Length: 536
Image (cartoon, rainbow, N blue to C red; front, side, top):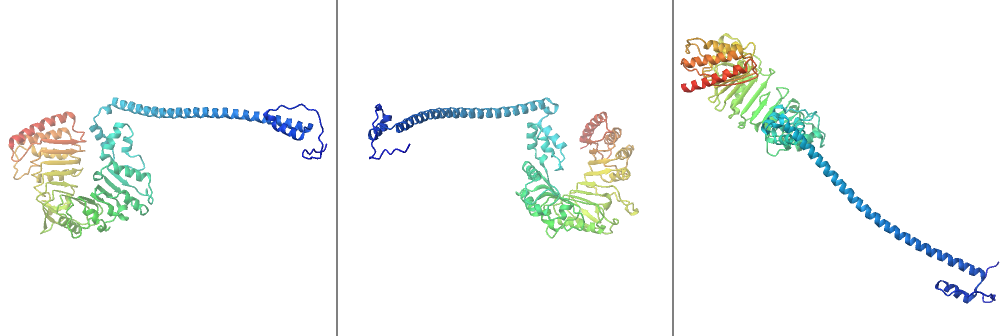
């Protein structure tokens, strides 16, 4: 069938009886078209199908609109549920954190309570802190966890005590090959922690190495805050290297150059500020007096100096350090000490303590051929009792009559020297023997005193003014000690001129003196105090 042109006016429409369509709003367009062009069966069929499709589309749209509204309502419901769920989740997380903190607090409390129930938990803080200090070795290894960190991890009480005690953080170490250029390493953080928890004026700094690639970082780490270190220790490797001394100030300085020929001039600024110097070389004194120096200790074990060098070194010390109070000279020199016919006399008004081997002296107050005029001298410490056996040195033991404190150690073959030595110190009231074979020495002393009649003008008494003993790590027996105390008490009762009884004894690591012996010793010391008070 050919196409029908509804707009062709020449075409005569066929008249066909039809039913008049309803005049509803949805059919206005159809009625209008029917009125204008008449109704054709195919057109009417198309229009009916189109109308039905339109109705379906409208119904479908309404259905989709309803579904959209339901979906949006469900989304709003789900969003509300999600919001409530998130709120519940946050609440659960907060509760979980609170529970975790509570568990941690309860565990800490339980540990503290357990610690309280333990015997060590009953100790006062002062005693516990003292125990920490006794078990702590400052020279800790950075390869291991430092003792302060271990102690502070035990419980809250220990942690507070450890952090508050600067003596546990007193040793700071710059280790060998542990720093890179401007890099923050665990070792650097550990050093920073020690510096923060210690007090600079009570801390010691050991510089094992000063690497060039980490120099700027170490300078920043150790930058001075105008508070000096208590001590700076520079071993041989650091001394031989390029240490930047501009950032260092210390109350005490220890230098250990490997060779005696090492130049000391570069260390002058650091040494001049120090009150105490400990080294194995003579300092470079320069032309200005060292007014800060009070303690000087020279430990020169290798014979790098002659007797004349040592003599000149002693002269330079006494002239360059006018406020020196303590001098230790332990020098192994080449050659033999020579008794000078006219010794050079040097006066030092501040020197209070001299420590040196007995072999360094060649006569009464003559050290390295120098006659020392030291009116403030109160203490002599003899580092060794060995001396040359020369006939012309019969009066070698007649050193000083003015010292009040005498310190030495007695080894196997030193008993005779020690026994002879103490007869020439009439003013000594304190004797310190730190180690060695003392049994024979004390037997000599009380045996000499056991004589019924002693002429003090021809036979000097051993330490007649002795009242205080300090003994550590010796083989002394309680029987011998009591015999010495009794002998001195007997002479005091017999009015022997010049002699005093013992009134004070400190003793450590001396197993030969039993607790029963010690009880008797304390009783006799009380008697000695009473007798001495009557003499005075």
